[in-house]
Length: 228
Image (tube, rainbow, N blue to C red; front, side, top):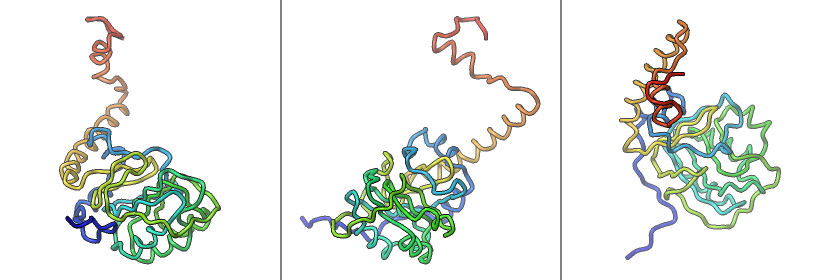
């Protein structure tokens, strides 16, 4: 039996149509319809709150503090891909900075998510490219430890397979399995409509949650027949 390559070049990506539709939803909406799962730890946050991204995951696993495989991933990734990098949450050295992220923008990538530190924050704010990270550190990385490209990874505590849909905004990042993404978007449409109707009701003065009394009874807070 042949050994599985550390670099997988070909994989099925979530479709461009799904990505375009998904980009219109908040990450929170997608997280809700996906069963409140698939979200990354809050440590993985946008460099600026206005940064957004949506696209297929191009996964990278590195050893803490080494970015050799990220350089390889930049060379291999296609326009629209989102680099999703499992840096083990390490913040003792930056895995990327202005030079690498400028190259990502030039290649037309859809954004970068790093569960690890990056650097050059002020320059990145001017770059106009969506970057999410676990923090910042001025120390540079090493470039000699092997890793993996387009294998399943854990990033910010979320399981990510190559080709999965990733959506990020000011609230953070949600990952939707590639095969489930189209069905989730249909549910997201319904969720948005329901929330819009609820906002209208609140504006009319209807601030009571109709589900709350039953939930309180089920939890034993209210007795049967008792109300708030």
